[in-house]
Image 1 (tube, one colour):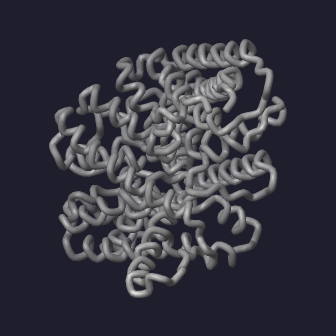
Image 2 (cartoon, one colour; image 1 turned 120 degrees about the vertical axis):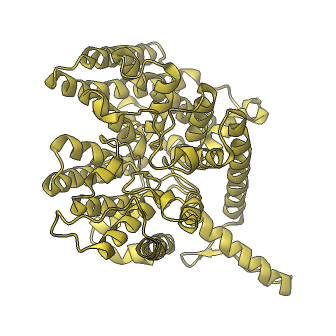
Length: 499
């Protein structure tokens, strides 16, 4: 094994910083337009970030532009850390979030599309900061790594190893034989869907500023809102919530299937085993939650009559059930009502949903539906093999036999995921959280969900956590967003061993 190509790693981090800084320049005009004091902080952060990126880029000209697996894992993990470290500068330099622990937590929560927040009064924050906060979601949603892959050919750098390391599921489906063309198509879909939702939300009654922020947060399955009450602020505008439900479900779907749907190949979408489990599973759980809301009288759930689409208690129950189930399954984290106030059974269901996740190849976090399908099928096969020990029965997914190595990888992922969850829950109790809150914070951070249970419920936030707890949750958000192995492999001795 040859030595690590450190120059290509640093050059890539430079590109990442440059792109991140350019997004800061997009956020600055919002503060200038509103004549906010934060404008100079955001602008300064952009200048510092772009300058740092340029220095890293121009002073690290590699002899070879090939990227091997080791470089790929390092670039993805360090790239996300680069985003988070530079991304907290607008908060720090503007004074919006002066504490480093809080600023880093808010930033990595944005890039990892978790949506957990330490802000206690969102609505008093400068518009430029709120836009930047939502932009961190949008950047992290599809992955700035994929965006950079799309322009790497211009720099003479190949990107397959990066895509395999960053791909948000157990496999990296491709829309086109060339990986750069895949990245471009993914981002085109991402941009078009974001703009479409923005226009629909504006028409439905949101201000243009709130519409663009919620569109960015929805398509990234992030969950940052511009309102203290999240999307519950729009309970009097049901159409707004229905639009967000639709786009949460789209964002939680494999983007390859979305591409096929946009090309008119809708049949391919419903042929997908994962999509059927994901979509009909979400609807089925929403029906159960609807019945719970309707018959158990949630004290926090208000039926509004100010909008012609509101038909009373039944409509309200259906809407809030579908909204909250979609929000948790897709790991978006928007809130239309406090599910912990419905009843204990409903809370138990939502806690179970923390471990589902959306589709592989989507912007969702969590375990992912496809992994659950493969694990369940493998478990049933073990029952069959108990009766027929000599039979060779492969696990089949979408009608095709699944390679044993993939099955083992999925089983290993789930075991490690649950082990980390258990250890993290116990660890968070050492940092002062009660057991219920520790369970919620660990599951939410690792699954990139946002709202949880206990003192981090949908109507609370993470401001009360100690600095140690915030840093620990930040680490969980990072490894959860990068599918565990990408980060954890860096802590193994054989990764650094020269063969």
